[in-house]
Image 1 (cartoon, rainbow, N blue to C red):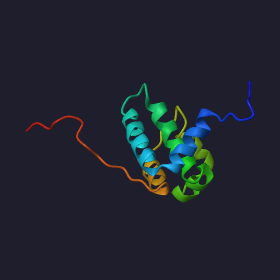
Image 2: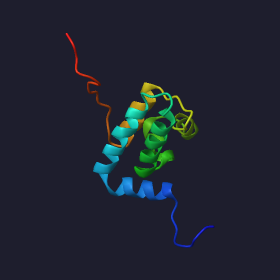
Image 3: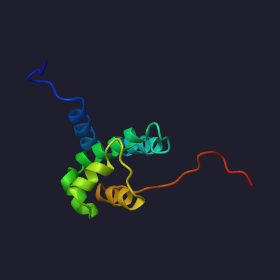
Amino acid sequence: MNRPNSVSHHLREVEELKANRDLAVEYLKVAMEALDDPEDRGAGLLALRAIAEAYGGLAHIAAEAGISREALYRALSPKGNPTLKTLLAVLKAVGMRLSVEAATPATA
């Protein structure tokens, strides 16, 4: 049943990410960790898609990233397999960047 005052979970999520940049950064950090797990990779890609929707929309982000909108939809789908070039371009387009941290303490 569709209630007149109801908002989909996804739309609410996008609005919250748009309204709170710190939340968006933390949300994406967790999502990027999911990319390490083949069983959870789709969730990470959908989270990056939500960030793209919040920070300009997919058409705008695709244009900024220099790829077609269709290619961006495919790359950020649950079964997507974006290249590093695409990930970096999308992150740049939303005003973020990739960083690295140690997964476990390094041993000599």
